[in-house]
Image (tube, rainbow, N blue to C red; front, top):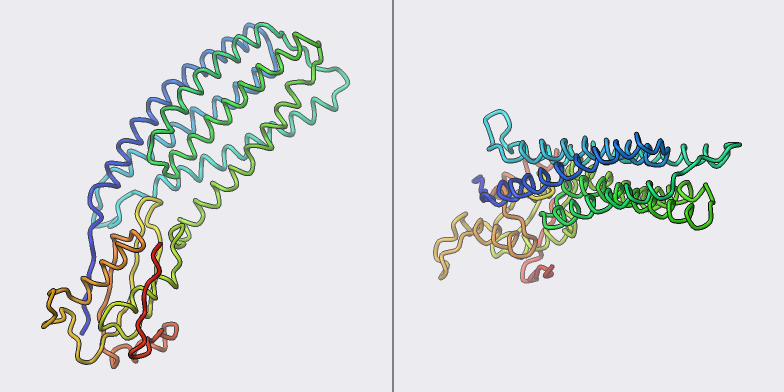
Length: 330
């Protein structure tokens, strides 16, 4: 007796992607204007530090374009060829942005070391540098404010990390300009750049780890798979749970699938229960309430059917009769 049961996850994902797309587009326009301003400043002053910051702004624009495209793709409905839709494109966009940001930080670190070892220190026009650094910082802060109101998806986080790095770069330009104006020390921007690298690298690596976890279909953050198993065993009528999988379709949509072996006297729809709830209804409710998993596929089996699958599945977990199992609240 096999039955598949799934719950649709509604339009929340598409709505979130649409809202993120609008925010990312606004941030893209602002960042592009900051890029133009930085290009003018680098041309007027001939500053190497502004030129380096300009290179980072170029990657910001490219990152935001990637994020906007990914958010648009995520809004497309599922098709017969892509039954989950293109929601995972946001995760791919975040991974690309994280890799690009990591490459930029490595380049900045190498450039900073080369400048420290150079025989002739770089010349920095302090006052002009301070003005263009302030203009860049204002634009970056506005972009960050726009992105901070988003859903917090990996796609938005990846774009926000780029803008944060650019904002820190603008701060570094301003600090360096201030130090040069006050002391004349030419290495201030180099030291500030190394500090920025130290701040950004751990965040970038963490984002890469999160995207890899999703792409490798790891369990949703904060969800213990064994606790999911315990919750399903706590459903009246369920004797065993095997072939349990919990993963994330995208960082917005958790999903689960499992085979449930029921008591011999139970039926998939539990006729005779006072509340009329079926095994499938109760199991789906447990996944939603305790773990926030709306998208689930559960198969109901007899013990005889489950025995046929043991050669290709992990050993099933059985509940001892009269030993109630209570899922821990999360």
